[in-house]
Image 1 (cartoon, rainbow, N blue to C red):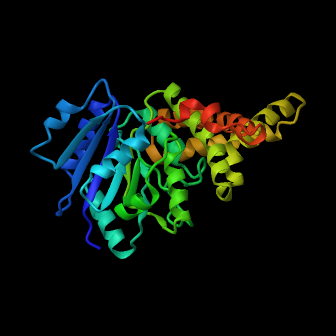
Image 2 (image 1 turned 180 degrees about the vertical axis):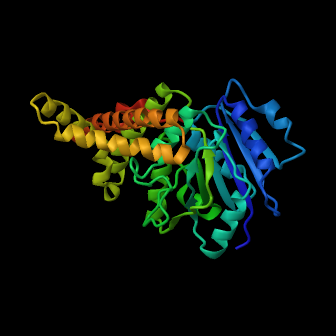
Image 3 (image 1 turned 30 degrees about the vertical axis):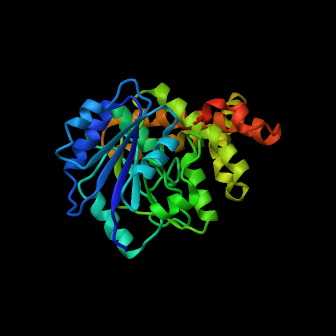
Length: 334
């Protein structure tokens, strides 16, 4: 298959991020032509002026539309794109120089209609962003499910770094209106249609993620809220591992209670786990402040996700509430 790549990038009030992303794309080493489709999702602070500065340097198509959410904006961009293979990015990523070369080489030998790649922290990112990146990608927290594994059975790509063929897009109709969670929902529907997915371990991007503890908490809490909804829609994909953050919170509470009665063993195991987190972050970034922030990031991640998961499970699975009515903020209307 001859690949004609189209990057699909929705943006919402983040012109500075688009500027940094496009600047990184200028340095990409790829001899073939590709296009960049940017979809402004009802922004009040648009990236129009930023994009004009790259018109003579990159092949860019730019569209403005009303706010209908990132999933629908990606669908809009894919309908407008001229390529036969779409690469979907978040606006808060930076591209390595060899990204497209890695993608092209992999797909040429192991073609799949949908792929995902890992994310990492760039050396220019803040200590907070690096700590959050470590928490979200470490084997000690997420088990590598976000792209750190080199051997994965069925990998669920994430839309910050995701490839999708035009054929698979047209067959699946693209992303749904839930957010977050629109990417695993699409992946599962692709599996049901007979399409395979794969991880391209070398096709990583540098992902900024959240720039404050509050925003990070809000993000992971939404991740927790979404998962029971996806399990309800696609019960065949439900796993016990999705309960781990909630169970971890229960273990913290149990450890504290038993410590009051002189049983320090469980609290000691908890402390040992965070020692591993600390030294894992030290090895990764070789900086004390990042390692300390990584411990806090893990606590926020587990608390936010675990709390959201338990709340959503209660309403969606036990009370059998309609997700669109119970959690209206997780759904966009066209």
